[in-house]
Image (cartoon, rainbow, N blue to C red; front, side, top):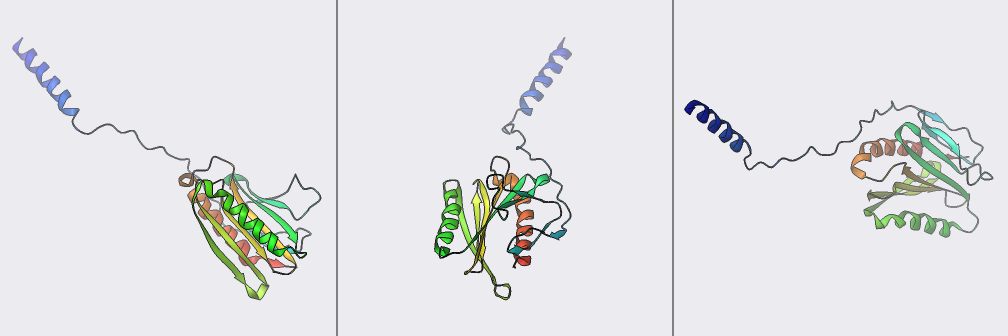
Length: 191
């Protein structure tokens, strides 16, 4: 009986000591692993006043809301759940308005963004200039830009993910797609 009490005492003591000051904390929420494809590019073949290279793992999709505007289309990253919406407009004494529209569309995300960095784009040898809006935070669009030759052509792009914005979860894919967008800038040319 004394042996049984001793074993019970030791068991209860061990149980109480195992519940020390360390509070149980659950594992942090995890995210799905994303397998990023190998970087390969192809030149777009559209009847537009510009050309550039897109990743081979993307598809060009016409803008369903503007079937009469063939140079309004999307670069769809199907397997990465993202899409770049592109819209082209010829400049006809409305360049300042296009710049303001691009700026205001980017800054509409200030409600959820904690920072919007602006970075100029300049390829003078190809007459390609523009501005990147890198939107930090849980905004709907994480990256927007416009390209122009300042006299005849203006194209605007915005990157959206097809899920609830959470910068922590999309950051690896966002960085991957930013490299592809930079390749678009580097290969962009007016016809």
